[in-house]
Image 1 (cartoon, rainbow, N blue to C red):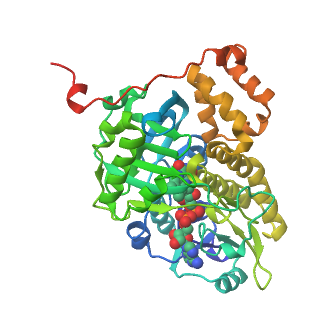
Image 2: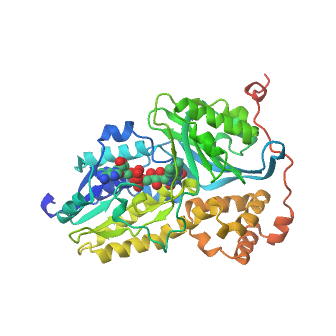
Image 3: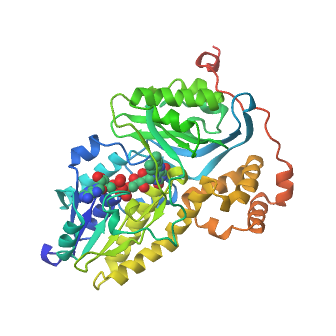
Length: 457
Ligand SMILES: Cc1cc2nc3c(=O)[nH]c(=O)nc-3n(C[C@H](O)[C@H](O)[C@H](O)COP(=O)(O)OP(=O)(O)OC[C@H]3O[C@@H](n4cnc5c(N)ncnc54)[C@H](O)[C@@H]3O)c2cc1C
């Protein structure tokens, strides 16, 4: 097929969303140019990852439509959840559960994922231009191509796409974030057994009812390989915010995380103390906050050209529910399926129809799961019933964690009656029997020191 009859696509932004769409479209026979404000080396080495970007199950299947799975590090098989309340003398364990996933999860550095996609994109004839585009540039580019995708993330060019008030639940960030990557526990397995049925292959999610949450799990760093990712989520007013603000480099990120666990989650302190900073990557940490926002993702430029936002530029999530990267690759893969078969022009109406389908299929449910994990008052009954039920019955924990992979079932489980039925169906006995078995733990098991964890010879 000659190049002249290929349909032309411009993609602005070379993060995970832009490079995923770019590779998928080149593979599908489109003539694609990616515009990026950074060159390839800078995208890989001069910025932090956009997030931990764990793919939980289903999104791996969509990603496989774009690129083969290149990574055997960073995979995880379940989650150990612990909930606490109070501080100091009044600190009390509330409940815990440790459930396997019914899927595989994978946490790979977004810089590596994007770079691997870009390498293949270029190898297959994709074009790459380094330019920071303005809305005027987008208008001019859109005039010259059949389709323009805007994949510039939460900030860049978002003024083209106003927030959709009907689909946006919050006007401000719900958490202050600290992301950091560490080495030191990358090869640990048995040491994690006090929390998890599958050692170091389970992620940890510690919830402090008043102050916020921490996530800790296996991660593939772009240069170092097997590492551990930490994300701290501080609620508004939490003392953790000041702690996070004191982070200025990789060493202080490590010290703050060690301090946080020592003070609020001392059961894990012995293990966490073994973390070492990633001095090799000065961008292995960042502070942030996301206002969860669903945008009107199809826009018209000054001269009337329809353009569509993908990834964070379309919907940005608080990362607590792990939905952003997953939704980005699902949106890209679904759009490519539709683009391949559509013979007519990519009009505003056609693009809007595709985005509405994406919202119905994933966007809305991913937004709701994020609200559930944020502890939004809308989901207070879910927390009240599902957490103790998960502590009693491992399958309920697994089903709850299944929402990270496939959030849609949550839309069907909204009322107290529906939650009770959900629990009863999974447990094979009435939910009230399940909940009656729940007992608050007096204390949680603790990590042992390295010496005492050693098997006596
Ligand atoms: C702490 C944290 C943890 C997370 N954990 C998870 C998780 O577990 N699971 C999950 O699914 N998601 C997670 N996410 C979300 C995930 O990381 C993002 O949704 C995803 O990486 C967004 O990719 P993107 O390509 O849309 O945006 P970006 O990665 O922001 O890429 C946008 C690109 O566009 C470029 N650009 C911007 N403006 C211009 C311009 N004018 N011209 C040219 N180029 C431009 C930028 O430089 C950048 O390279 C997390 C996010 C955070 C913050």
